[in-house]
Structures are given as C-alpha cells and as structure tokens.
Amino acid sequence: MAERMGEGDRTTEEGAAGDEIGSGSRGPTGDPVVRSVADPRGVRRVVLDRPGKLNALSDRLRRELHDCIGRIASDPSVRVVSIEGRGRAFSAGADLSDPPPGSGAPDWASRRHGAGAWQRLLDDLEALPQPTVARLHGHVVGGAMLLAAACDIRIAARETTFRIPELALGIPLSWGGNPRLVREIGLPAARDLVMTGRAVDADEAHRLGLVQRVVPAGELDAAHAELIDSLLAMPDGPMRMTKAAFAAMGRERLGSTAWSDADLLWWSLREPEAAEAARRYLERGG
Image 1 (spheres, one colour):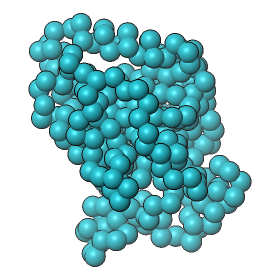
Image 2 (cartoon, rainbow, N blue to C red; image 1 turned 90 degrees about the horizontal axis):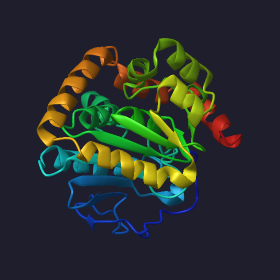
Image 3 (cartoon, helix red, strand yellow; image 1 turned 45 degrees about the horizontal axis):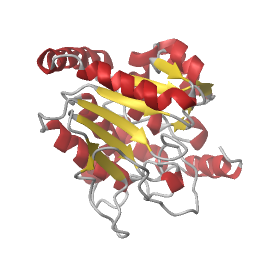
Image 4 (tube, rainbow, N blue to C red; image 1 turned 120 degrees about the vertical axis):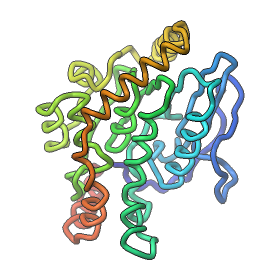
C-alpha cells in the first residue's frame, strides 16, 4: 500500500523512446497517469506515470491501465509488453487517499463489482497473448507486487525492496493475491511475506522466485533491453502458443480460491479496526 502524500502528480516526459500512443483517458489536469509507448519492433512499454506519488495505484490509474491492456490484447502488432514505473519507484502500492473501491456504487452487486476491479485487471494482464516483462526498481509494495507477479518475467534492480503490508493496514490481502503468490513462490514463502509484512530485498526475492533476474541499478536499462531483445528474437507464432500454454497452467494453479476476495475487501474496509490499523500505519510511516 502507499502512504498519503501531499505532492501532486508530475507528468513531465523523461526521454521515452518510440511513439506515445493511446496513453489513457485524460483527467482534470489533462495528463494521463499511464503512458503506452510503442516502438517499430512491436514492443509496448506501459509506464505508470505518477512519480510524485511513487506511482500509487489509484482507481484512475487502474481505469487507464485497464483500457491500455484491452487495446494491447486486440493488437496483433504488439509482440512484447513491458510494465514499468517512472521516477523513484515501480509503485508504492494502492493509493490510500482514494475512497474504498466500490464505495460510490448504488447497490450491493455494484459495490462488489467495484471491489473486485483490480483482481479482474490482473487476470486480464495474465491473459494477454504477448509475453510480459515487469521492470522493477525502488519500492514494490502491496498491490504493486501482485501487478508484477501477474507478468511472465520480472527483472529488478538490486536495490529494489518488496513488501506486503496489507495486514498491518487492517485488511486481508485481496486482488487474488494469496493464490497468485502461492503459485509464484510457494506456500511457505507466501505465508511468511503476507503474515509478517516484512520487507525483502531483490536478492531474497530472487531466491524466492518472486523475480527471475537481478542486476545492479546502473545496469537495469541495459539488462531490460537485452531481455526484450531475447523475446523478440523468438518467432512470434510459437511464442504466442507457448505463452497461451503457460497461461493455462497458471490459471489452473491459481484455482478458484480467490472467488471471495472482493467480498472480504469490502467487508474489511468497513470495519473500525481496519480504519484504526491504517491510521497507525500512516502515523508511523509504514
């Protein structure tokens, strides 16, 4: 999860290569918070662009990311997708300044639908026909860890830190997080990270299987580019068939255990104990 921060979003461009297309709906400031950058080789870089708030996962960001994933899924010219964060962090997790998900809906079914929105987005990301890469640096917290875990290959700078603080905030891990982490790193490691909320560095994340590659921060761009090149070097048809096969295996391992996550999240957020836990978490700075 992300802390509340007073600094506004900054959306100044930082030398992205390629053409920026379909960057997401424009909000009150006129600036998207998700940028989609294409290059002629078929690489689509999807950049979380709220650096002033450490790319906190707001509902507006979710909507723009959802639209972006939908366009990529239907575009056969896209061969590789890279999920990235601009600024000092990949993402500090869910934006705690947002209203609870689904809170503005008029009825129970609509509120439940709203509470499950991020879980559906992660499922859609995993279902993309193209291979996906998560480029990780800085902080990868809470829901941001689940966003990364929904990608096929994860590469991290050695200075990256990972943490799941949901229990400290008074809520269970949702968004399909528990079964997704169990699938990626195994039950014992998932229990440890979720139940203690402890931070792990990139080297431990690599040993656990949370990331597949770790490099020094100064080498991240080159290593990320090399990884993208290795995926592009494979013929597109067999790559898509292989991705589909792995995605089917992943869905089977994910199972149906997350069916109630939206209900648990909505119920937990209404409890006074959750509000008090979140207040204490923010007061001590995480």
